[in-house]
Amino acid sequence: MHLRVENLTHSYGELTVLDDITLDIPTGRILCLVGPSGCGKSTLLRMIGGLEQPDQGGVVALDEPPESSLNPLTYIFQDFALLPWRSVAGNVALALEHHALSPNERDTIIADVLARTRLTDFADAVPRQLSGGMKQRVAIARALAVRPAVMLMDEPLSALDAQTRELLMDDLVGLFERTPFTAVYVTHNLDEAVRLGHRIAILSRRPGRVREIVEIDTPLPERSLTDPALAAAREKLWNAMRREAMEADLELADA
Amino acid sequence: MHDAHASAQKPVSNNNRSIAYRGGGFAPKPVAWAGATLLIGLLVLAEIGTRTGFISALTLPRPSAVWNTFVELWTSGLLFKHLIPSITRLAVGAACGALAGIAVGVAIGLFSLARGALVPLVAAIFPIPKIALLPLFVIWFGIGEGSKYALIAFGTFTPTVVATYGAVDAVDRTLIRMGQSFGLPWWSIVRKIVLPGALPGILSGLRVSLAIAIILLVAAEMLGATYGSGAYILEAGSRYDLERLFAGVTILSLLGLMVSWAVGQAEKRLLAYRG
Image (cartoon, rainbow over all chains, first blue to last red; front, side, top):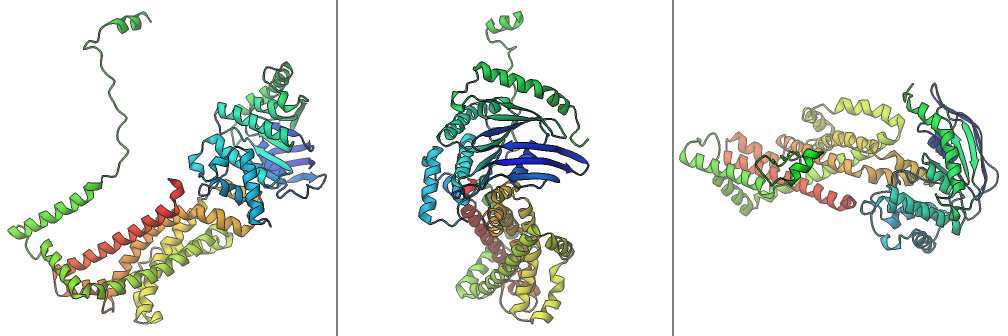
């Protein structure tokens, strides 16, 4: 599904957080949004999926989502957003229960996504028993279950420790390799951006504007952090972001 | 650097102090025997005091005499004649009040209009001593069981409302956003996310409102009831029969323990996921 953000502007009262954002989100590619904290990247992501309304401009779909998609725009949240009283399978089922599926179809989907995220053995565990990485894999399984046309990922690895983050990045690359998906991936981590992004859009500090777009053509599975091309892209991103981050750091939150 | 090296080679002498532990406390643990020991200790003290005459019979009844009265109540079958109407009143009144309270509390938690209209109303009726309204309830619902149910229900209602809407407010907003992002219908979000999320707060509110219900039960039974623990206590009090008075009070304590145990069981089953 091809989305486009068009002239999107948003303010909270006097404070403009997003200023005239125009972005293309093409099918089958991962767009990373990076920027200093407070630049409105998470707000923008919520607007792309219809969880928040912009003041001006908007997000348009340039084509129809595939028929098979149960929930075209599907989020993966930073803090996992799992129901603590439901088992792993129950959390995945939550996303399916209100769709017209036979119990059989539903069970097949749940078994399939749990297998793809290597969670089959933990289907009956409750979130309290899981590690952070496992919790996020449950959230990924839940997102895959509704066959999204676009995945909207809001700092999905930020709540995890560095090792788990590496492992989960490999998982995401593996999932993409098997079935390429369209995604908007919000992060403040440049390593994640150069590892997972086909296009990386840098937002400026508040009010957020698109400062620069960097394209990386290396296919995801071939990327490694020692690759000079990636290191150069990372360097370029950091140079563009450094000033914004430094100035954002000196601002009062409510100024 | 040199000093540190030198002292490491020195044999352990009196100069080497071990670091004093200062991280203890502030973590009370349940001590199973303490409650029973205190209770038994107080009873033994009272027994000794009344037997030696140190405590006069007018001040405190002898615990063994209270026990005998209680046993007599049991064997004569009078205990259940008083206890069963009490439990019925408590169950009907508290169930009505708690269910209505949960419904209103959830409405306040979900709808702006309900919140705007009902929060001030609940704040206004919460501090009214419900016992003061008993004559009014007698006129409205008759001198029979109706007015007793109403009093208990009304008293249970307000604290349940306050606990419930607080619990609904405290439900993690990101979970509700998640539900919306997966396209869950409104009612599914309420049923599958809001209500289970509010359940811990509602149950701890129930502990308070059910204790209030027991207090009101006694008050209601003191006004116009032939049977019931309140009527029994009132009768004993008016005859200055301390043994029976204390036997009646013991029944109420037992009722309180039973209610608290029931809520504890509900928490254990419904909130098992918290581990």
